[in-house]
Amino acid sequence: MRGAGGREPDDGGDERSDELLGVLHALTALVGARGEADVLRLAVEAACRATGSRRGLAGRFDGEAATSVAWYEVDAGWTGAPQRWAAGEGAPGVVCLTAKSVLGGRGPRDGERALGIVGVPGMERFACVALPGVEGTPRGFLAVGDRDDNFTPRDVRLLAALGEMASLRIDEATGHGRLLPADCAASIDIAERLQRRLLPQEPPRLEGLDIAFSYRSASAGVLSGGDFVDYYSRSPGVLAFAIGDVAGKGVEAMAVTFVTKYILRAAVHGGQLSWPTSPGEALQELRTGLLEQPDFGPDSERFVTVLFGLLGTRRGLLQLASAGHPTPFIVRATGVERPLLLTEPAIGVELGAALAPYPTETIELRRGDVVVLFTDGIAELRNGSGRFFEDEMGSLLAACHDMPTADVVARLMAAGEAFSARPPGDDLALLCIRLVADPGVH
Image 1: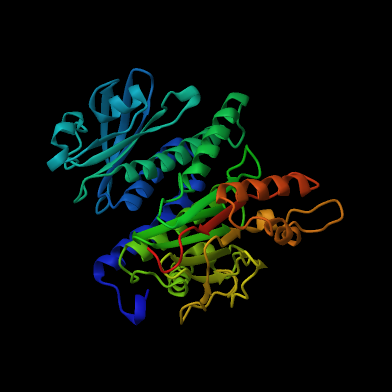
Image 2 (image 1 turned 60 degrees about the vertical axis):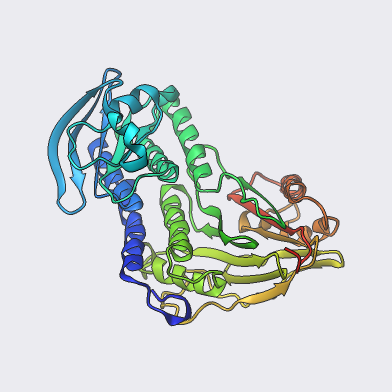
């Protein structure tokens, strides 16, 4: 991958990108696992890749003890090593008894080493999370460790999402594709929580900006993590953001969504691109990374639409680049506009490498202006006459200048629900960003 201005990233950036891209391979294998042991092994491998850990293990909990049969080392593979921790003993036993994650490390975290993972050498730094089961009782644990820096709460959230995916796959694999009623209820809960983990918990709080978003899944019982929203901010007064939609539903779409988000994060935060990030260069990096994956081969119908934006509050300049994503609305005091984005096709429609950054359009915002971004799930809602909701959005937004973004989001979501003749068949994602402060005054 190229860096900003044609610079080559350093070796560390390449290695980190390879680790993040490799997560997709592990998740794809996890989706196809046919037994509980395979699910646990593949979850560990994905967790090591996602967190940059060199070792990991996972196991079951029978109510009295947590057990595992092997541990994984990135450089050496799997080693048979049966281990047992009574409930409340060692990190696996504590996690399985309390359903609470445990972090251990060196330096500032010396006080937590008493909960270290007994019998697994080299894991002085570690993170251990529960594999969720029925009615809140853990069915087991997932642990990674042996990396150069301490683990963080962000790592724990990532591991928890992988643990939820593994638990759902275990239910499916051990039930031969058929879930009992009690398991269905647990799977729905896991699916909904996993969906939420793919979206930011709350928008960032930046002076001069008012931000709100909404996301709704098309169906409660099916993983449909194809839509995503993400934010990036490395300096005051500058926000980068992305909204995207992965074709398809279920675990496979969610896996691609997961990797799409973290390719962008690696590019923006990992030093591959300069800051403030050029939206066109961000999409170029994303396309290059995704097309290296087997999901985007000539026989695949997989594709991703993404819109990447950059907004500075000091001058009120909004920069946008799009890969096949719906054009946003700009709500001004004088009316509602839609930029004529020089959009490229969705990533995956054409399989050639992106040889240049995507075209970027620059728009000047004024105080009170609102940017409304959305996925096609809301745009393609239809009424009884077959009319698309996207055709109604402009008139609905005309009265929304100076409105708080939370009110704009609520207004559009309620109007879309009332407009549609049938329940939505796709996920709905909506993001609103309003320039509050006067441009030029920060």
